Length: 550
Length: 67
Image (cartoon, rainbow over the protein chains, first blue to last red):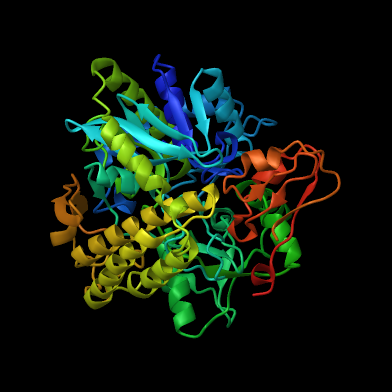
């Protein structure tokens, strides 16, 4: 379920083991998900002999960056054990991580890394190349099919129901195992440009897996954390890594390089500190803020410009439209919209997975940005494959669980309801209200009062779903997305209320509990649903080298 | 209106096929696809990458270029 980077690697992992694989995607797998238009970086250690370039050093970085919520054993199993094969797979399908001309890796460091873990590469055709391999392996690809419900019987996954967003056909698929891989949740918070689809990550990723898994009985984790980043003024586009990796400076309206006020690594600090620095400078009235690259070498500038276009296909067009030449002048920046996704590069947020990528529901696996221990490109490629491999292994040992026709019929009736309404509310109006509630009550500055106020408004807004209408199949798809957004918003707010400390500031900053409290809160907030009620509980995580983060 | 299709279009429908946000419609196969939901464009570039004729240009709204 989901044919993005994680989903396609899962399909390959399962198909290579002889499983019969069906891929569902709301878009078309050649160009869908977060890297639809390409990507430029992949995080890895390469064991070149440098002290920072080993699995142990990398896992120390993972523990330090994700301290409190990262499960290092799961990370090691789903990423490190799969890394070598992942790198070889990318080469085999025609999107190698090295420069094809020189055969060398172009590596840069940022985000608090102890060495240059980012590999810059040309991932412009990574999605079509993976899609070609998925089709070559004989997987059945159902493009433009949106999943709307997971069916569970006898506590085991039995199947998935959905509809084709262009023909209106229904699909009910029996499966022994399912890999949920629909990414993180966007369109949840107001954007700085007031354009809801002008988002950093893919605005068509709206938390379907998180909602469907939760309703099927699975546990979610790390859901309290939102994420924001630094983007060019006007365009919520990726590219920050490229700037900070090359050594560009952040400067405020007074011309000061401000980041060292907030973190000893300056612009090379972890992303949450870059956002925290920018928010504080703006709050203090020292805006507007800029990223300055004028001091870079000619080679550095040239590499930077090339990389920006690889990470966001249209970013260089945008800079031209704004008449900005980063070689000659600083580029104005802004803080992006917030979203639901793991707070750091090495730990995710969403469906809780075990060492086999399986959720707490038998037969339901998760991978990529919708899993609680996976994140971004490197883990989608390595961890996605791991999930597919394990799902195939599980399906060989287990029979089909019965898919009850009654459940399928009920879901079909629920799906078409918005199309049948002649009067009602459009999805956009409901979403706009949700975004305002989330931004005002569950944003980067949170308190018990703001969160409880937000929760009661979100629950009241749920009633509006009964009146949502769709004039065509496209709007029906959006209306189904709105339902997931409301559920994710409720879960995020509930989990944020439960965690009475601050962590990864400002991704979970409780103004009433501003300190990080490792004595009581080193662990995950787990979320389940009983009936309509969201239930939260705490699960401690113990680290071998216990102690305060430095 | 984000992607604009110019007269180089050969009506192959690639943009309509690949758009991850389903923002195009293509009711008349003799004519180019049209952008039905411009406000829902992510500016990801997928349509332009898959266009065989360089028939797609991005035009950014004022809210992006002038804020």
